[in-house]
Length: 338
Image (cartoon, rainbow, N blue to C red):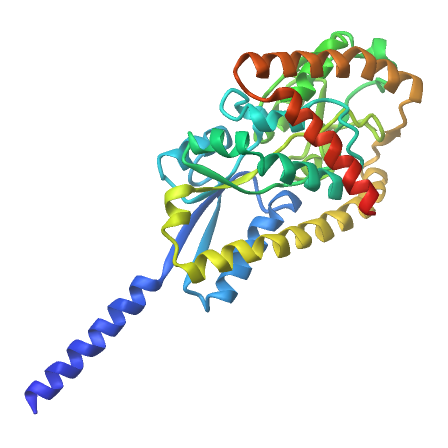
């Protein structure tokens, strides 16, 4: 009888340990606070947990694991399994996807931004570059075109940008520099303080970030239609962690990406619908930039930036022209399909 009990206990313990071994817990590094920009990450965690009956869970940490400029480094050493970062924070580490941050690409909505990002992420050059950081591009964080909030008199003529101190990263920073502005690449979490202290006069963000990081509360005006470009912020996973998943868990993760992005687009769409009422509530003037000013800005910033980027990438052995052409052809296909 004792042998039978012992065998039963051993079997039960073996089953328990086997069940425990099936459980997977990932740490996910993002920053700021939960907002429209992170809703797809939150939704992904929710969907994966549901599909695996709680066997695969994700702990989303807002700044508790790393600062935003070091998330890719954290992924490379396996400090956490998933992270979000923005290309403009370290363009030398993610050269390929910076094509998506070139000014005036012509992207007009979130669906188009998602389409061009996905196309570039799937390019072999992007895959190979991310492999150097032990990272796999999982999904994008599509954002609207950036616009400025500023203090004092509105800057609605190109001459007004001369000497303007602007928080703008990556290709956007270069675009503003081309028309005489002085860009600084302080992180999103530092933008409010930079504006409050007068380090910058203006901040370039998408709508959700002006809300989340409080820069709208410092603003006197908002450029509703300057639309010089946006930043590209992928979500990546550690390759070893991804390949270490069971087939069932990997399928749960992969199949949840489209659902998470659909949720993101719907949620962001609601925020955009409310934006005008936010401006009115906070007493922020909505400034419309004339077509002639936008065309002048584009002529001075877009063409030189594109050619310089392509030349620099080709000099480093990367397919710069091919990547730029991929963005443009994807835009054409996306519009044709609609």
